Length: 399
Image (tube, rainbow, N blue to C red; front, side, top):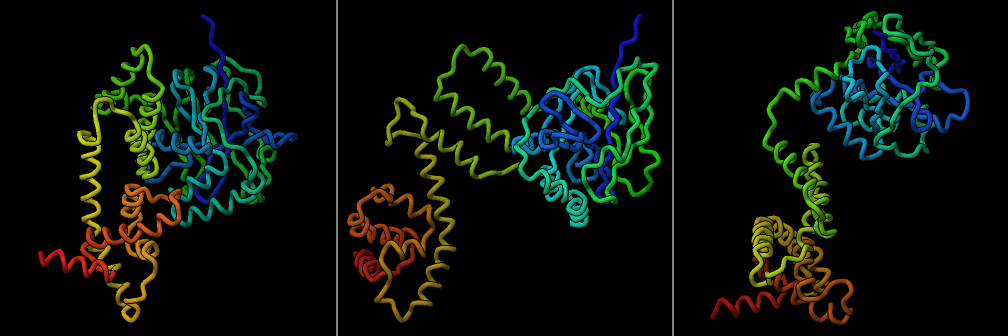
């Protein structure tokens, strides 16, 4: 039986304080290089191993892929999908998912300032600032690159003949100060696949460690599917079986899934929630009118409760205004200015759109009808400010 040849890739390290972060150069869209190219540097992008960036942070290992995906959506990280004959020294990756997450230098900074202590942030700033300046105009990364070639590697050898790829520190310098030079990592390999070894010869000051992606995937696969996972699989199967999906429904579904994905990533993004809610509210439901719509009833009830809970803060705002203007109570600003200063924007928006007084309305209409908006806001919040409100309120309670 013939022995299949493999390529063993040994990444160089970038030192940043106690961290040693493995990196490579992305050349074009389908090849990598471990040493700094001498020409055409703009098209060659240095990328840094995500697992090393997230080592010794508060993010649990099983959550790393979700964080990587979050940064990838911003164009700061990418997944390099390697050909099946690639192996990585010090990294154990399943052959069926032969891919690794990498970050551009801008992603390194963003991750560091979100995850690291102040001292480690300072180390990253000192170590990477020159590279960051030189790559300031880089475009965002694609979400995935399919890597089939390593440009500066020796011809592949058989498994029994493989030895670690030698790495020349001086050839891989990326124009950084001498104290930030790059070092190689001593590791051993198994005859059948690159196995994990504890970092050797790095001393106590190195926080970098090897990563076993195989064990992580096995531990996840061995768990029972959660209710959430089962539901997502069920939705996926239904989509596959659906012959056609209306474009409006598809837009609604995608907005909702966008927000679900953000929640899974641990993000509470009110703008994303707004988009999801608005696309739902704008979806036509046949057979319902404004008198019978359960959706409108639910929204109105929720909105009323929110405004009622804001009563104390509105009262505080009004009392402060009265104290500041006690001597000018008969010479108050115009109704629109007064409402803007004293009442939440959401309350004003509800009424002005209800009454047809949005920004597109004629000026004379806003001037003539805005006092009604102000009066409603005063009564609804139980905070009387204008003389009209006091007179009307006294008249109403007398009856």
